[in-house]
Image (cartoon, rainbow, N blue to C red; front, side, top):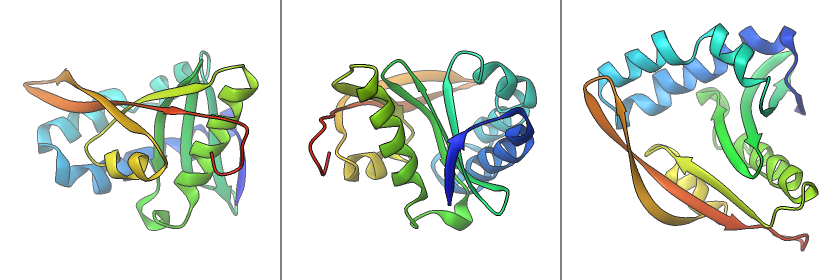
Length: 158
């Protein structure tokens, strides 16, 4: 598995990975109409092109296929997704640890994120603590997310 910054030639593969994760992994936790909006209106090729302009975006690739993605804005993790066929194999952990190291290189000692319902336990396992619930309107639904943070250090095991 190679973890590297997303390039334009990765966009379609990365988007395919994200959309598959939303469609399969997130679907049990959200109404079908919310999943539909995310697939049809949010996670688009245009969104991907814009995201890489103001974020440090990475892809975990194997054999040229994108198995996971993640992004960092300052010290906030965003859009960490892993292809459902590769979940629970360390892909997400590698992406998060890589982005945490990038945040530390920028001088940050805390990393923040807003987790989906689906990923909350993953982030807790990675050492993130719940700060508060946050609400977002998606279509006709108010969706709950979780503001979380982690103190990162240069010590091993962080």
